[in-house]
Length: 328
Image (cartoon, rainbow, N blue to C red):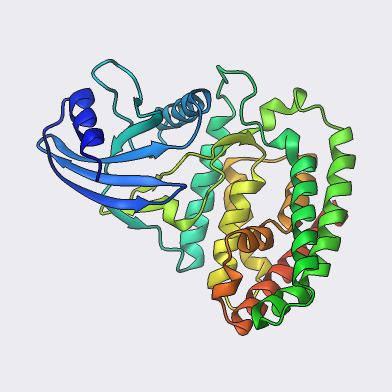
């Protein structure tokens, strides 16, 4: 469990630790719950450099001070927002007694879209104190190229595969790669009309890992956003994409009317220009979700019927986004 680490935490935060519970221990994430005489806490190892960690802390603090529920980060007795132990940074956070936000109906999704829009519009006033760190919007084209290259390599390697799940994905991948190329070229055209320095007022703090396990609902109905390790300055589509993906997974079919209701809730809080909407539709059409499932090996754990169901709904969503883009 790391007695040396716990001893350091006890000293740095003046805690009388009584019990610990290891929640997650992977190469990507180390999280434990600490029960001390002073209360309950979450200790997280942060796999990032100090500059990026400070950006994350500053982002959270900015939003928290403006009414967005994010667990408090506690300072050490040296007034630092994190401690270092054996070359790694650790953050001590408020423990929230809550469950994953239940995306069980459209009303719940609309409530979340409303809150996401409010968070995004608030974040436009955020001032970066470390230069243009973690600015994702200016790197979309490079990201698209890397994603399409990965998908192409995967397709070539699996072309002779016999596993039913890989053959199911292969039957869709050409469509998604053609779509990805179309999106890449059209985003490039849109980027020619935009200067990312001038469009800074439209950029938001994007959580970038906006899925249900990182959205908590406490006992009194308050929503908390946790796990901000991937936060960056970006356009809104990345968070909206994860929200739509959660909707798709839980629905029987792609429902454009439900999407419009969700977008109306979001846009009431954070109005987007015509050009921003174009970029939104394009990015929502890109096969981010397919690539993410390939990288994490999720398809290999699914049945052929589950894969077909998911990718068919994603295809319908993609076609709708492209049609909406072309109409603008």
